[in-house]
Image 1 (tube, rainbow, N blue to C red):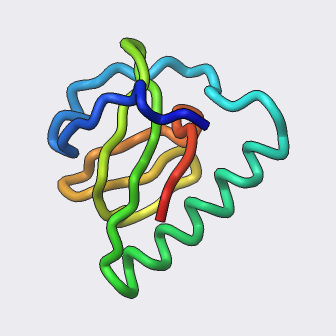
Image 2: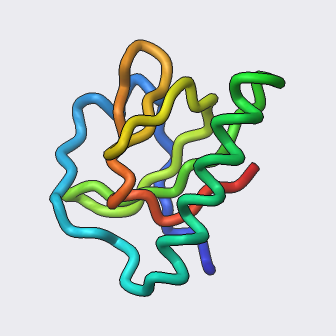
Image 3: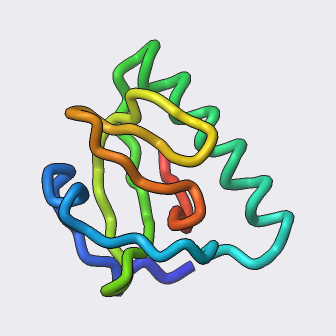
Length: 95
């Protein structure tokens, strides 16, 4: 996947973004891989304070944030200061 078009933003900017309800991933395989990556990222974040690159899309386009995932809900990941990114908008994670 070519990630050169993703715009790097600060995690504080995420809370001002609008997220459509559609899933950015179309195949069940990709969705399963996303779930595995999120589970791994939350473990590393909690145990080792690892930062991850989160590639996602909001209503305006593709974005990238480099941060620690603090928590996971049924519908989203939670960053510091209760900043939320919906699962359906996450394209991939790099640990």
